[in-house]
Structure formats: C-alpha cells, structure tokens
Length: 433
Image (cartoon, rainbow, N blue to C red; front, side):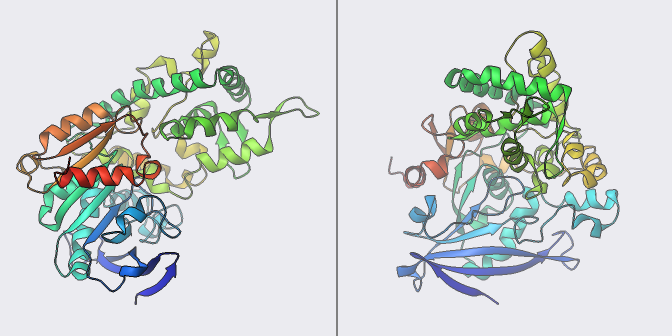
C-alpha cells in the first residue's frame, strides 16, 4: 500500500518493495525496502522521467528533506525522484545490534553482513525499477558511496540506466583497502593542518584534551568510552564544508572548573557522544572497509594497520615531541567495537567480516571501458573521503565519462553547491559545456 502526502511544493509517496535477501537465491528469504517518491506539486500528474538517488555511506538512509531543500529542488524541475533507503538502512530492514542477533551467532551475522554491499544494492534497484518506470531506464544521482554503487551499476546492469551523475564518489576500480587508506592519511593530515592554520588556538586546546584523555579516559553520558583515539576520530568532520568551524566551536567549550579541578564539560561530552556514536548508522562501521573488498584478500582492519605507517598520528608521541596532535578522518578501527556501546555486541561478527576473503568483484573494467551510458562526475580537488587521484584514474577507464574537477566545494558539494553542481553535471552529460 502506497501513502501519499504533501509538503511545500512537493507530493511525497511512501513506497515499499520486497526483494530477495540473496539475489542468487530469488526464491529464498525476502527483505523489505523502503523509498520515498518525490514529485513537484504542479507536475504530480505528469509522466516524468525517474531519477534514483543513491545516498552516501555506506549505512545511511536517504536524505529526509523538508519540502524542496538542497539539490532536490533542481531535480524536481524535470524528474520524479526516488529517495531509496539502501538495504540495511533507514526503513529498509535495518541492521544493527538489535536485529543482527536474529540471524544467530557471529558467523551467521558476518555472512548476513556480506549481503549489504554495492552489488546487492544494485540488484535491489534493478528489482524495483520495472514496476516503477514501466521498464524504462532511469537516471541515477550517486553521492559518495552512492557513486561507488553507480560504477557497480554501470558494470553489471547498464541497461537499467539512461544517465548517471556522480558527486564525490568515483572509486578506484582495483585498489585494496590498504591502498585506499595509504592515500587517505596524507589527505587527512592536510585537512588538519588547514584547520590549525585557520584556528591556531586549537593546537593547544587539542593537546590539552588529548593529554587529559591519555591520563583519564572518560565514559560519556550514553556509555561511550572516550579515549584519545576516539577523540582524534572527530577529524571526520574536517572533510565537510563547515566541519572545521563546527570542530572549533566544539573545542572551545571543552573544559569547566569543578571542585576536583578541570573536567570535560557536560556540554562537550554530550556533543561528542552524538558525533562519535554509530547507534544510528551501525552498518557504516560494519561494512565500511568491505566496500573495497574484491580481490580475495581480507581487509583485515586496513585503516588500523596502515595508520602504523604514519606515526605522526600517535597522540602520545605528538605530546612527547611538543607537536600538534593530529585528528584522523574517515577510518574504522577495531577499538571502536569496544568504545561504542552500540557496536560492542557486534565485535566478533566484525572480526569475521574483516577476515573474509570471498568477496566478489564490484566492477567490470572491460564493460566500463565499453560504456555507452552518459556519465558525468564532480571530483572535489582535495576530497578528504575519496582520493581525487583514484577518481581521475577511474574516470579515464570509463568510456565517455566526463569530469568536473573543482576546489570550490568539499565532499558535501551536492548540498552546499545546489543547484549549481547538479546543473553542471546535467550540462556535461548533455554536451552543453
């Protein structure tokens, strides 16, 4: 049953679909997917082409817009938009500590998690497309991990696509997770340096917090154990357009005086808990590294292992050397499954996923080299989350793919640059520039 309702300028319809959990076993267990259809109020009765939005992540449900916010306003001028909660996220059979035990023990949970990568997401899209479009191909807009899904789509089901647009999400076609993080740590270091150049007073503030946490790890109000490594992971914010500013404001209120001496303030702790917890998006932590798995090698906590090659990220060493303490960025570590109460029950399953070697290929280089689908991609010049060098190498490997390389925006350019980013990509695929 589909339910329609209105917000300013838009008609929304809740869509529910049933798809196989394992597309190789179409008669086996089924799961439910949810998506929200959006169409301009004044065009609701028209036959419009469809645009499928593939959210970044992995592990995040589609944007919950109010009215015609951000890029959606531009898209609604010519498309009927489907905002899909990818499997395991949002309202699409969510995965987390509350639901995974239904699968059985850690081994069964790990097997289940292997079905939540881009290959399964693309098969979901192809399963639901005919019923919505009458069999017609649709345009996809892939942000970040949604771009990874787009390359998988172009590899294995290009017949379902009329056009593909990618923002901040052209992955390497063959890099192992080690290669991804080996390229990532220098980018993260540049972002931290830029932050300290902008807010030099934060150098000492961060050193003081790190020193405090090395001596006294803090249990946050929701049960998260704030260690110095966890504090450093707040650097995830630095890849967004306003992230440096938000981090600065967070740091300036870190300490308060108490009868027992300086302590991390309740306000600081409450904000940090919200920023670090994966309670709302556990799948992000569980399958983040497996999105790079496809060569019979385990990912094996790549970010943690590769970090050892960059000793400047060791907070204790930085303090001893009187150097700035560096934040880390988009990296998942095994200790997160100890510090975060929403992940602790899933530690054994996460270890088994990290050791897995039977990952199937996510991309088909030969098919991409013969691609016939118009594709345009925004590549952000110093994107902290997706390496621009890897992206441009992939762009050269996909026949006909056109890029717009820019330093005007950070990774969230689709949001902050709306509608210009979407306009630019549409102009590229239409040969208007």
